[in-house]
Length: 482
Image: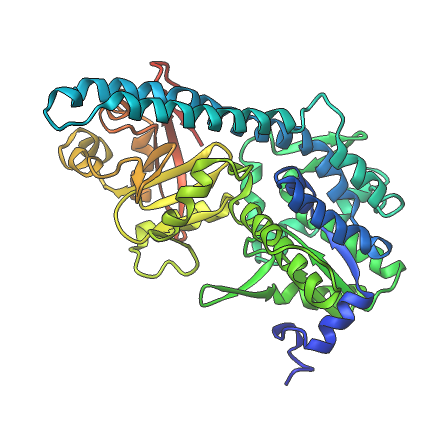
């Protein structure tokens, strides 16, 4: 059967060897950007593998363009994440001291003096602050020399694809994009949500308008065009993207490239052997098939960055080091939504389409946790046919008392209450702005709910209609309608 269904088979050992000996190696944008997020040793190890394969590296123009557009944002966010840890560590001891002093331990007749213990804590915290400050000083600055980009410039000199000649050429390249996305033909159909924000849906480069939702499709089409002119029987594609529009998943496991990608690159590009790696799989197999010497520590660092994304930038972050493993004991990656009711499945599917790592609570609240650039975002899901009555009632308040920000000792930085109603009641939502504003203010203070999101299920997927956010500094944002 293999000749007829080659797209459902993993490479054999001989085929893996062929890939490492002769394949064209293509990198996605996220692999390049993750270099800024890696500790120095892991970054150098990954660069070492890439530099040893330089003769066979290539990136589509779309990859290089997205890298140039996004790198400063990644650098800034990495610095900000360390600054937030520094701020937390700076105030940590003062907060503990204040609470301990209120306990008056010394006066309880226990023979315990709190002062030397607090002094030790202060000394340990000072060492921690020095380590964080040293990390911050060593970080890339948006206005400084960019050694990462300089190394990439050398690595990909003469190895970047051509840009579209004009708007007509780009439009022709993605002319079947809408139909592909409608039929769930990979890649890129999971990025359709990028068009919802008109301020971010498009950008201009060299007087050519690019639609962000078609970014993955453009890079794929550019790869196919290269293969038509420069034949290669084997191709390796390295990506940090883990969405279903790139990968085939079975029973909760990622087992290889999406079969339609394998078929299309064979049909359109004449490629007989196509495979995909995540970044950490790439370096692991480099050790196995290419005799690279990437340390196990570097492999783990690369794996962590690829799986967690830009939230956890450096290993000094105590949240990353101490809490992420415990979080994984209480939440699992979403694959088939087993055990969830229809309402929660619909919200889960919507969250997946947003393109960020989504986790589902095994027990407790909130129902979902999304890994975002600013931290962990919890989503608590409720259903009601009567939105107004529900917001005024007691049931929602008792339910929110358990929908807190803590999940198995892991802090949720933001909590959104998602209320799902019936489709035929959507029109009434538009009349609830004042009520939602009032309720949001109450919920933000009493239950630490940052936002209320209201919508309905459309073909089994949550469709948001109204969102209201409330900030803890007392300011609030007017309700946004989708």
